[in-house]
Length: 312
Image (cartoon, rainbow, N blue to C red; front, side):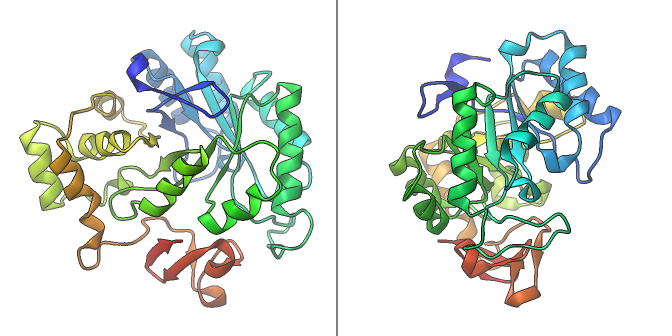
């Protein structure tokens, strides 16, 4: 990858600003995932993002081996499942076996809430707490099994809580981020605290492909709307991890464009239009007055009306 597309983490290591995400919309190993990784690495991608919960770490590992690209050239991220908050080291060992590697470049706490094996969410003050899980993740850095550690789906409220006791500042906070949910306040907070922000669903699951404003910008640059959105994401210094099992789209996603300050401003403010500010993800529930995986929006630190998210 071009050096211009590398960001420095707060531990001095580098991470490619553009990666390929491996959530395929359903859990499980598949040759589709293996092929996607082979294509991506052949095209020049050097950042792969997966998770234990995706159930496809073995396919990712096979793709890496089949590509012939040296392991040391690829930045691999995987994530700790909420069911494994009480067994952090063992969970990473299992992921390493599936991936076929002795270390990952980044290990994320996938969600702040700990779940029982039956999927019941423990309250925030129940053990293992965020702080207890994080302490176990910090130990992994000392072992070398995780070069960097970070979090995912953390709000400002929960980052404040974590940082009260953290010995290692998270390198990354990975959250849903796109023009419908730009996370401006959270991004600024992360910058202030020395974290980078990784955007998942950076092209909003293609729900903005027909947007007139974005279409006009794309036409001006002879680009696709997806290329505009990825360029906007990187233009605001976030890491973007789009997923595509389509070879041509993988190629397209590597081609970034230079957006003007005015175009960046327009996209930054797109969420202010009526009906635009919302999540595009399906993990929200009306239970408990609005929740995600058993924690209320208040516990997660999100100001939320069902169908529209405003993280604090």
